Image (cartoon, rainbow over all chains, first blue to last red):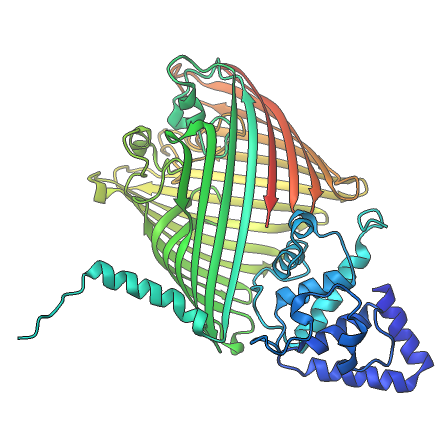
Length: 161
Length: 422
């Protein structure tokens, strides 16, 4: 959350152009009926400070390629469901970009489902959402906010820092 | 004449179920979900003085359950160790289109105990499963209507009278602050040991019958209406009906209850309920009243709970109260709600150590005017200390120890339990 605020404050005060780009991208995501992998990568990467300010949505995937991203976010146009991100995939992306302790099952088998179950258990994901539900842009923004707020509340020892 | 092949009803039904399951998979709006809970526990109890207790009198949440006593055999109820493990799995598949959805749910439980469970070391049993049709128009502001057909858990809002798995049908409507549900089902296909179908006292001879693991065949109907946000309280009323006439008994029972749950003022909250019971074979009604008042302090972090419970016994004005599901007015040896006055006190400080360590102490005093072979009024008490440690967010270890004292003597016990959730 702190990183997120620093990024936003920095954008607001030091670069009106970058802020305009950021606002335009965020607005585009918020209006999306279902968030795409590129939008998800940009949203999480820019919120967590993992990509530089000014990076466009189309370039976010390349900038985050160094991270160990979930398979569903890698370039693979052959995937039949390419173009929509499920809550489970988005959960794994969040936990990969901004790490928190993931519990027993996530530690044994990190996957979209174990990440989703962990975030549901700690209250970040509402209990009535199935892991396969496609996220809307607004839903993804809200989930990112809830996740970063939760991560910021964890005491340093619990985060292994 | 053309030779026509007649399709059997069983095959038609199997094809229909298969089509129902496969239809969501072909749909673009297919959703799925799954969950697994693994629990394992080891209990050590001294049952030497508990020999006079009828096994059927023990409730489901008590440490010393009927199977524990049965596993001790005729040799007597000596010090014993009981190991139990269970894995509960749930899976659901849902097909949704704007405003309406069809959900198929399956759940099962696998039980294992070296000392035996219902006569076997292993048990594999279906839990809540069936078909659910869900309607949630966008104009309902998040509200939804669900109609279900299959096996569901019927639970009354007080948690004191009905908590029973049944095969049947029902519906539930949730509108922002209103919840209405109606469900009815039979218990004849439910495993009585795994799902603790003790039912009313007159059914407990059936429960004790070791020739079958199925529960007595009874009909249970439950209606609930709840509304939240009235003077910072959730209010609920319910009505339940229990019918044993299908099994040949000339009797039925009905219940009407009221629940208030919420703030009293400041850091004090309460949960209070009153339930009235009537029976077709008795002129008088029975009464159960219970209330827990909780004080929650932020500094020091402490939760203090004081509770009282009264269940009417046979008297001039009232008859003995009987809950439909087994009562658990006690942690060590559960006492039926009828003929009972209970006063309890619980203290839970913390949690400590990065929110992971949760200790608690609780105890209670029981006054039962007419129980067991003596026929005399007796006073009993139990005290329990427990500590839970959350090793990981999905792995919790709990240790507890306690003792109960009654005219039958002392019953000490200890239990370790691990719970892992996916």
